[in-house]
Amino acid sequence: MPTLSDLVSRHTALDSAGVDWIHSLVSDWQLLADLSFADLILWVPDQSGTRWVAVAQMRPTTGPTVYHDDVVGMSIAVGERPLIDVAWAENRICREGDPDWSSGVPVREETIPVRRDKEGPIIGVIQRSTNLSSARTPSRLELTYLQSASDLAQMVAEGRFPFAEEEPILVRSPRVGDGLLRLDKAGRVTYASPNALSAYRRLGLHADLVGADLGKTTADLCYSDEPINEDLMLVASGRAPRETEVENGGTVVQLRAIPLIVGGGRIGALVLIRDVTELRRRERELLTKDATIREIHHRVKNNLQTVAALLRLQARRLNNPEGQEALNEAVRRVGSIAIVHEILAQMPEEMVEFDDIADRVIAMTAEVAVAQVAIKRVGSFGVLPAAVATPIAMVLTELLQNAVEHGFAHSSGNVQIVVSRDADRLEFTVADDGKGLSEDFDLEATGSLGLQIVRTLVVGELSGRLGVATRDSGGTEVSLSIPVQSG
Image (cartoon, rainbow, N blue to C red; front, side, top):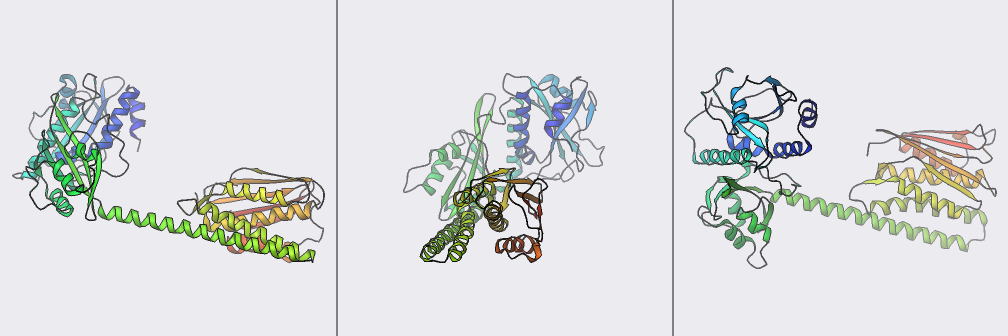
């Protein structure tokens, strides 16, 4: 299905400001659909001005839908749906006409012109379709919803909704069904839905909400012994289109205010309410868990560095050169693992940017090399899971150390790491221009501890493939192919 941006750019002549306004409207018009108990379809004229194109659609969560199939992308001729034409031509909300029975159920059709601002031109028309099959005497809740929907529709027609100055919403906003309060222009509650009243009961309210000054009531509940949050007063009084959260007694409630501005004056506000206590509790648990994991990685890194320091101290006390070299190799192996844990201690998730680790392993190898060896990386390892990053760091350490020690001995040379990565596989080669492999070299039977470690990690632990060969131009090339999850 084409996106809203695709449809608008392909079929209409809207400028960037008009497109941005439509995106803002569509991102928040679930509110209008739920308050109306109706389906919404946004129609925009095509470039020729002879047809209407449906660029967005929304179904209500509070009532039955009219359109079970998607209509986005549909095109109709001007004149085919007269109410759309009238709303566009006369710049007014059209509610006239009898219910339409063509679909087998009675449907009330209304149209709402969409303006970008109070003085700007009309950029589209919303068709609001209400399924009347379950019509009955409306309750007070439904009457409040419908009156609020009427006010909101008038704001859309006047270019006052959505709010251009509203701050970006970072988490899911409260919806109509979560809880709704209707305020008068003085900020007093004229209607409270059962869910909204329950949320305030959990905050500690014992009196009735209707007739109460919402800002003062909320502040008294939540800020009795500390300074009042200024955002709370703006939101709870309905004066600003913002969101805030209040907490009392372990209960956390999210508030969102929608000022109702009709005919140039503020007539009141809607305040949507959602109890997010459980959500915030889980978030705190996750934050605690993440902090614990990072602290564990930090302590493992410190312990590994302590082990490396002890091995270095022991190596200095040995008079046997082979023993010293064996301990120094152990220090490098422990160091490569410590680097991974150091990176993980700084990351919020068990995923690491491996390029940083690779570069630090390269620098560590170059520092201890006897010969003058230039090591270069080409390509990116990308993001790797910790379970993959640790063995690959050890593999890279062993391969570089082998190249530096056995490929060049006391001569100078070059080592190149070439990396390629796709969605599910990591491939890289470590190539040097040193003396190359002996003619009787056999990877399966090699006595090199380093290559045995590499083979065990790549083939046994990572289920990858490993190849070692002499380069045509001289030197050795080790190629690896390892399955990895996409980062």
